[in-house]
Image (cartoon, rainbow, N blue to C red):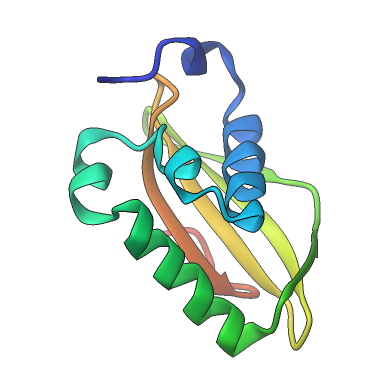
Length: 114
């Protein structure tokens, strides 16, 4: 079922709340706003595994910077710079007009938006 209240929330707020839920280890809450395709391909346990692997490579999460919104068609790609213990990275989320999450990626710093 698509989110109802999320459509009123700005894409950068969707990204920051999702990141906060991931950092807290609340993977079911982080996945709650996924669109149906994302829910099929990235379950809460798979999201946790991705986050754990990312932290193994980049170090533990320390903090994040200001989100940047980039329009891509009807969707908005949100990049959030991450300060990790070993090296910087970025969190990227694509938010659809209805507020649902269409993609979520943990990246190295500086990866351009396609």
